[in-house]
Length: 250
Image 1 (cartoon, helix red, strand yellow):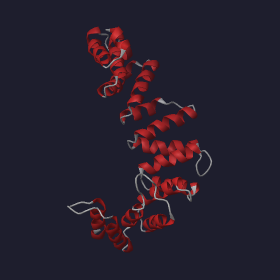
Image 2 (cartoon, helix red, strand yellow):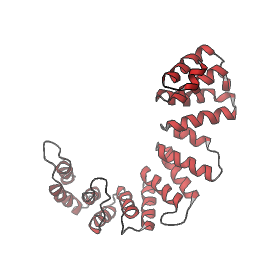
Image 3 (cartoon, one colour):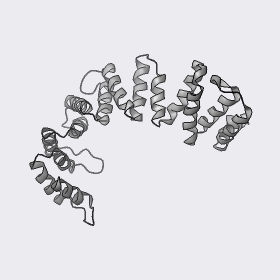
Image 4 (spheres, one colour):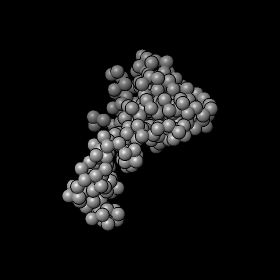
């Protein structure tokens, strides 16, 4: 761990040290040779630069060493390598992402969903994609919730529960759709939920979210007491944010 930490300091230029990837490589190799898988992964990732995946067998060899030493995060890196590099194998990428997901990586689950959804490295498997996206979505990955909604639509499932997860994890556009779905369902017990979803959007300066709050109060939807007085400030917020329908409501 000491050798690995020195490598991080030299790689990132910490503690007053100049950034020196060559020196960092030496320290990461020392730690990797003592079977610290994280250090092997860091050594391999030195081949990445400016968003490029760092293609080439030397990097892949370090990632394989990391996995052999028990570093589960390296499964994702190996998956990215095989999914993006010219000499990569999409089937290995798919398996690597699955292993990352099984090891508890939310990113691995999200990527497992993607390769199964789009048939990379094997057949399209919507059931496997749904399971993987669901795992990542429930672990607060908004993009995974969005993709889970897409799979639900493809399989003609109820999408409303996934609107709820996506909204709760900060995907504001889905808060809007969630509110509309609740209104369409007409369940009078869901008024507080609709208020929560719309308020989340409004707090994010989304004009439609503010307008929805106004509509909920103005029309007394979903068991919410009908009140022009309570509706007015929300229509005003939406109007101030440039929403012409809200200005019309005012």
